[in-house]
Image (cartoon, rainbow, N blue to C red; front, side, top):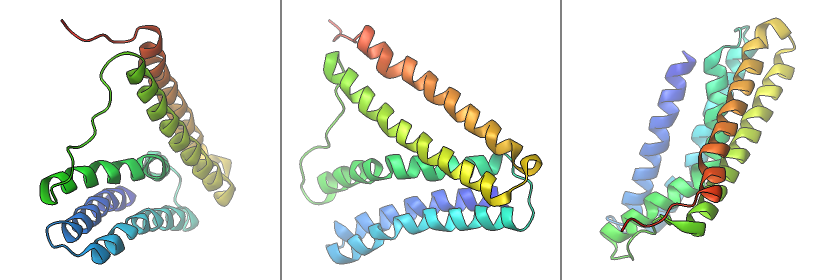
Length: 179
């Protein structure tokens, strides 16, 4: 059931985002667009409530509860930049705005970009782990929440792989333009 809620929240995120941008640009209703975009975080609150209720009603925590925490954490960390990314494209396409800003492709600018993205991932990891620990405390039963600890470890490993594969790699071996 929680998987369906997670999928529904992801769909709801994109529906509200697109609806807000369509209202803002093609329909030229900026206030309605802003209101719809302000509703995007409500999707995250719905997911948080669903996961908490599931655990409160006696469910044993599993990977889906960890996935819900990760979704919420990374939504907090990357949600604003995803909205900005989509807004730039809509503004360019429908309102004559400037072309979307692309991330740097080479050199130290690329390395700095990778460090900023990793910092967002670190924030997402911190929020997700805080939610996982809160879920463990909320349930108060180590047997029912073992999967949440396992998920926190998996998130930590993924974050460390990201660190080495992108920002550290780009810092040590900065990419160069092709000739």
